[in-house]
Image (tube, rainbow, N blue to C red):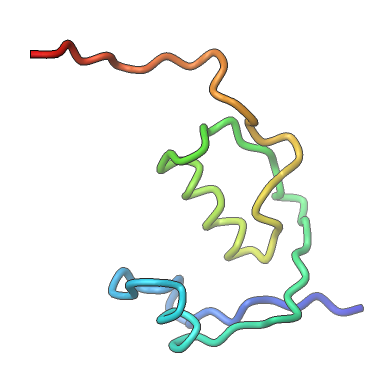
Length: 88
């Protein structure tokens, strides 16, 4: 079975001018038979869900044709601390 990759523009990932996934599909096409491939670079991330860091990792995975989620990715928010702003 051959590995199928998402067709990306030659000059890099989709541009910020795209407003949603449907515009990206119209512009760049899609591959309904896409089969992700876990390369040697496919590592887990400890970035919390919803953070810019996690989104960047997931975008890199897509560009490499890898699965979005690694079974050892951070699954919760335990051990994290956040800034607390006092109420006025």
